[in-house]
Image (cartoon, rainbow, N blue to C red):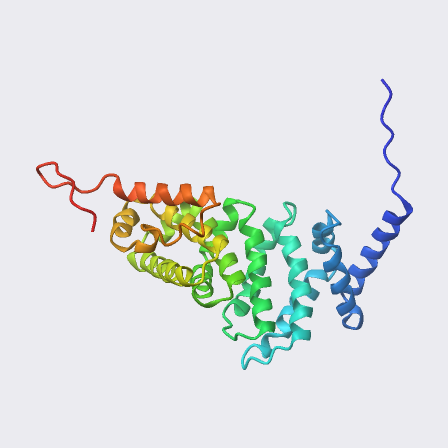
Length: 297
């Protein structure tokens, strides 16, 4: 048996590594930072260990946080320019890389870095620079929940992420709504998250009210991918006995009739979830003493 020779790193790959090191060093200096942010954010897909390099290099995370804090003054009053937005979104893209890497995620949470993005999620201005800023910030939180790690949900539940997501779900752009609903869905799919949301009537009713408003909006302006996440949230809520009781009263009619038949005609997964949801709400109906099921309200 002969050992397989390790591929020799090509000259190009080596030059690339050197470039990456150079750009990471350039993040520490305000004069060279903007270009380094741009170059590194372009390369983040092609350098698998970029996250540990960013996290463990001197002053890098501080520089990225400085980029974020620097635009706080442009949030209120809302004066954020396209240039400022693009620049900070490059910094956020690098933080997303750190958030999604298994070697750096725990440290990223322990340092409470997601909290630096919450002021961006609080913004309501509808201009493109703000929409892009919110969407990119949601992307960082989305990358965290995508890992399906318990520590992520535990961290998020200690913060105000649920009301922030609900507000964006109600009034954001279609893309922002989709990411915000995905984040809520991932929180709900975790047992701790479901228990947290169903723990008080206020929390549950806030979530149910926003989901209901979204169904109404979707019946006027359909979006298959947004509807998919909304249905999944409802289906998961129906796993909780108290929420199931409440949903029997407040599930929007549009989910029970043929309103979305056209939108979902090719989406077998969402159709299956919707059917399961309706079935969950019909099962275990309260019956009257003679054993005749009461008609659903």
